Length: 385
Ligand SMILES: Cc1ncc(COP(=O)(O)O)c(C=O)c1O
Image (cartoon, rainbow, N blue to C red):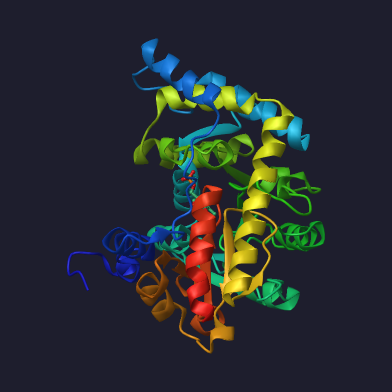
């Protein structure tokens, strides 16, 4: 317990990623814990950043983001989803999706409000809901298929519910919510007059099935804040360029918070991501197909090592069950894994309120070079012996 940390953030000490990454460094293990690619994104995007820096575009960009990027985002939403957004009033550039999530929650909910989300959930959701002073109510995605009980979702919505916080394609399960599931969620949002904040950072990393932005469903564009990440779509996670699209009133509300968090960030990188968004369809389909191959590579290796694997339909991640090893404690398993075979993974329990539901699950990242994945799979086979 840190005596200086305010009570509402006490449960959020040091993230498991920091602990596991430190373990990877200390033991020399292969780090499949944190989700970042180990190769750079497109050279044309990188060169655009260098050109913007050399052109002297190094001071504060406009608060809502450089016009090139806002226009490119609007064009992207039109091109891929047939959604029209005004680049001046309905697009807001943020410091990664992380800031878009934080600013949205701080702007749109507060003490006395409830936020409904699915577990396992990306760790920043719980922290940001707590920072906003709101309460989270979670609905469990049931392993191994990660479906949810519609009645459980209905029951989670109360008169205090202010918003639904979604994530599809979903970290850590790799689930891509189906059109039918999203239609049900949309119906409930309309019925209870809820705002939907949807984290779609893996929008271009859906391998099987279609990614359906919930904003495309009837009546949803007006009540949805859609969040994206240049880091994920262009494999430049360190640039921290994200954005959101929403109707003007919602965008303005989030901007009010965002301007006092970072104000702005990543000026020249914003210009570069605008170039990326203009790349042809082949770039986006190749990104997904390369990652699909990596997913298959890692899933096969995990299965051969003895894990029970649910094949993800999208994202950087594969979730595996350790039950076949006769083990049930994923946290202990992950702490011991570097010593046992030189690989780092993340215990999925950290993404759950219902710790029993996630106890035996561990998450591996597949967004690594093939030789790294192959090496990790060879090492993991030591577990099978
Ligand atoms: C579901 C999800 N949302 C948001 C983020 C953060 O995105 P960014 O790096 O653009 O802040 C991540 C990163 O891992 C993520 O997995």
